[in-house]
Image (cartoon, rainbow, N blue to C red; front, side, top):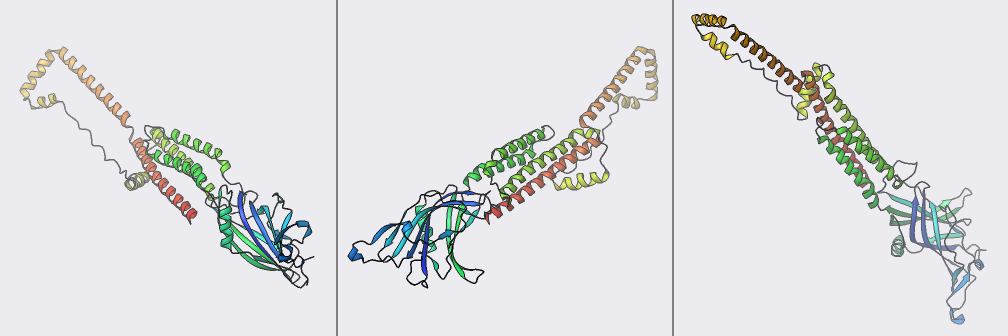
Length: 416
């Protein structure tokens, strides 16, 4: 029975603990594994002796020989695997001190949205299993700061977690029958060490997205930019597969870091699709019809000036040079022309030679015009190439803007 002479007397059980180690957090199972030193104190009115007469102040008594309060942790999920302590300590005044190690595997509602910069707040609820408030009442030994400071000083292992605070409160919970029972709740706050995840996940992702951003500087006319971007996408996909074990596995919420990594992959794939589209415009424009007039007016004039690629000036008309011999012949008087005609008629061979030279000159000019046209391309092809360059510059600006806004927003959410 409860160790009181009068059953109307309430037994005050004083509770305290020291958090000795944080063994791990399982996000998928939503449990926190810790190792604590639990200490209970209560008064036993049947075990009182005179210290001076007996000559001893404390004695160790087998636990099964004394009444021990049925204090449990409501969040307990597994059997206590800590070493058992068979004794309790008994003072001459009747004070009983019971200290034992407990390996606590407790349920905890984990919010990993801010992973790896998350702070988890788990609860340890101590209460009597069958005794109500009129029989057993719970009290806290010391203060929250004492428990927290003692835990920091005695902490043996924390793994990837850091203890940041311990708060407590006493709650009187009513029952359906109209009675009440006491609960002593401890709120344990732990913060995840984020250095490993920043170095292994965030920094490589930022480096790859930066390389993809600067790949827009490559001249797309002379370098196949799509192969470079495709290599980046493939490398980033392999990187995500190799680091998948570092990410938390849970179906409750999607961590913000998953959004960040998916955003990086989406931006790379979008950049690759844009490069394919622009390459098609630049390389296959010779087979396209002339762009519509509204497209030329909007893209070439408006968007071109907006992104810093104004339309090219209209090419000047080719100057036609007349044969100087013709001009000299025009300045010669009529009598001289007649004499020259007479002389040319006399020398038929010279006239035939001159005709061959004229035909050769016309052929060379035709070849020259054809070569220049092949080098410059058709006017419609030049327009499509200019449109492709303007769209590429515009999408590059959108890429920078969207990436900057997204990254700054995610950083603000993490920091706040």
